[in-house]
Image (cartoon, rainbow, N blue to C red; front, side):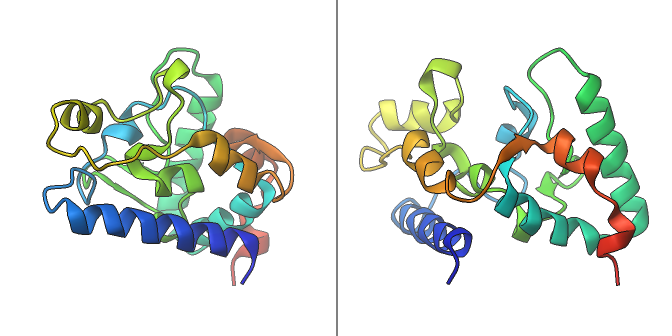
Length: 169
């Protein structure tokens, strides 16, 4: 099992354990709060980009064009927060869910408190005592594990250098 697959497996197991313990867990299909409040353009390692690119290449051409337009607009956008260019806003779901980056897999746990990167809805439930057993994910530990997976670039940079037709069957 490669390193990225192991990271995915570890995160998925931890998230599932939390969901099993908290049947009213907020994160799920249709909850796109994190996707609407990105503080910065998503940054991906080379391994994450390779995985995401597989998902993008499998999309119908019209969806891929729309994502490309969203990413191009994002590269020019200076205001924050930003909306994830991979989000299907009408469904409240990721268009490449299986291939989503690690930060997205950690749901509301990918914490950088100094930058305000965490789910405020989850935080309020934890603070209120209803989810006292929830342990916030540690962004530093996740980033440390990702550091061996190649260079890190903004999604906009990876996408700008990609030739989609080269990946398509």
